[in-house]
Image (cartoon, rainbow, N blue to C red; front, side):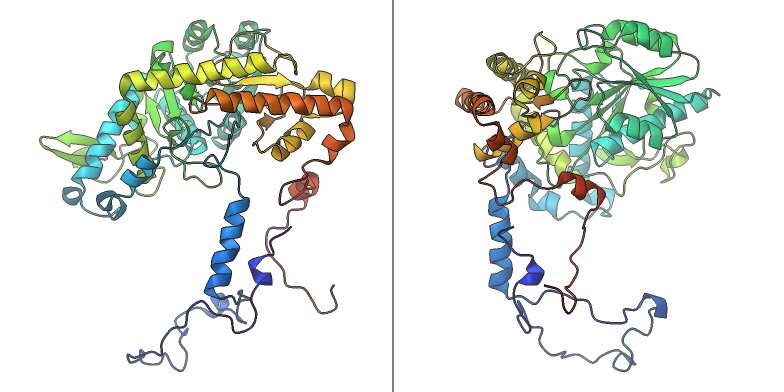
Length: 501
């Protein structure tokens, strides 16, 4: 790697700042034993090994690292199934307004009226967009939203005296779906997709029964395909007494065009950091609000924000408005009130675009994806040859058989062309899968440049396959040993011992 670790920079005595001598009296006894109040077992036996670097060394080190980073701010980032679209900087500025930024989460309601009003307005907007009755803004990410939604499923069935132990997920589901269901204590039942990429109704019917609590469905799914049988799926799930859960990771494709609530979904989680423009990738933060239909409102995490006359307040659901969640609900799932700054960005995004703007987001995202898919269909295989939604999945299986080059090699070579690759090897039901999500914020020139790069790489695969297997050549780090990184991760720096090279 071209850039050393910060521990390898500087030297003894290098400092970024020096604290002045203490000019106030030390507490009694502190001079003799400043850590006397700490239990002996919690005290360090020796000083930590911290880097000794000057301020310029620190600034230059992290500036160099930031320049190596590839982000949506400096290039096309078509990471399928993750909606890495442009984030308007105005929304960042709005989230940083002092009235929002400096508000303490423990500030009393009377001093937080602006923030409470924004939360109430955002909740109403999300409910209108999805066709749900109410939303909780608490979950801090999509995966926590899934866990919260499944906790609501469990609370609902238990309130009816029913014990249901299975959750159905399609084989095209996001990996978090079965993980969330398992974490919530459910047995996961997978159902296969049909020839058009939707749920196989025959397999679904066989899986449904009185022990099924819910079906988790992403629509459009991770193949980028809208399930044409959603209404029939909802009918069958409800006939079995189960609930229908909507994974909102792909809501970007249907904004203003279709609503999960109108399709028969009972519970929805959204990824504000994807669909509604909050920055994400490389650390987020995320936000995964959960919405429900009216009959499930009592099970939502509390508190919710309600309007009370000309004021806003937190409603904990308990008797007398106490800060004790109502019996039977899932309680509180996040410290304080969720990732508030992400909520500010999302509300600004919705307010800026309005209904027509949100509809245009979906239409342009779908148009861009279909343009790029048809442009690349001659270079790769198209496993489901039908119109896609916001993303699409190609297969490099023919290329692998003819040249030995895998889509991993294609992805690595794309880095040399200055592009972030799409998602590879997902979903698992497509051999040599390459998933691409261009989003609505990219120009025709960018889409064409990306297609031309992939077409050039396919030509290279036929003429110089070994070159692709050695790529990338121009990045700060060449191809990593991903197997070792996964199975033998080195997560922290260790000082070299005497005698080591």
